[in-house]
Length: 365
Image (cartoon, rainbow, N blue to C red):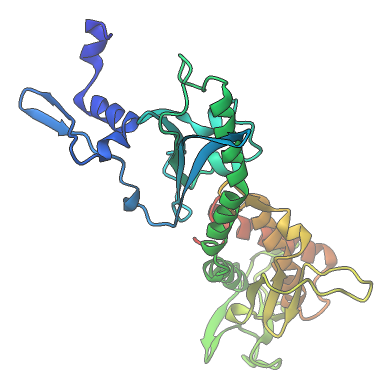
């Protein structure tokens, strides 16, 4: 019973939502309509629409029975309906339904001694229900079921079905975790492209891209090489440059320097048999996803989908700069300290421009 004060707090929408949540299977019956009304306002209760969400279904019926002394006793059917929502979490975990009423979320039932409560019944992309018909008897608190012979048979059957359900979920996760890193690579490439021309260096356009200006405006190192001319400001060693022009040989990398994430190949080994995290081939930094250092930094959530962690962002930047810095400096004119400081400058700039990647799916940005 509701007291008069509590009843005033309830809106028609909340009453409708509670009815829809607790009686979703009952509302599917063709000859049943439940309306909630107040004055001229009428709400019709409707069953949850699983078809509104894209994804594959898992649906099976298991007869619950036992045989004693050649006598078969049938207790009823156990119906399991689950849907994988294509990687989208809608905050509606699978529930037990008994006698057409919602009882409790499956993972909360203590008597279901399952090792898959998190992987299946608490999976953020799995919705659905286990319909036990009239076989089980909920406790007064409606958070578990009475321990009897039939409930043990039901729970045993659910556990027997879990390996097949796990296989279904893993298949769906894999199907919706496509190995397309193009957006991630593009964002890194844009950040790299800014590095060559971010700072106190004069640049001008040439056919096919940009280059740094030198004294005689000649590119003696080819299309991807040129000399650097400082126009004042702070240099990579942190000291103040004068306005005098100082030449130093650098690579003008620009848009010629790219990264590619390889998720198919095993890491290449160096001469000492140590697996490389990445390597530079032609104009690409190839980063091996199968390297353990990469895998350790992936944020794999309960859904099975891989997300970018902040440590993975830093890891990828570090691999890029490991190849970028030596190529940027064509000569030994810059001190080792200056190169290290420039490495740090680049690291912080790239971290700042790519920090929003953390928390995003690796393949779906």
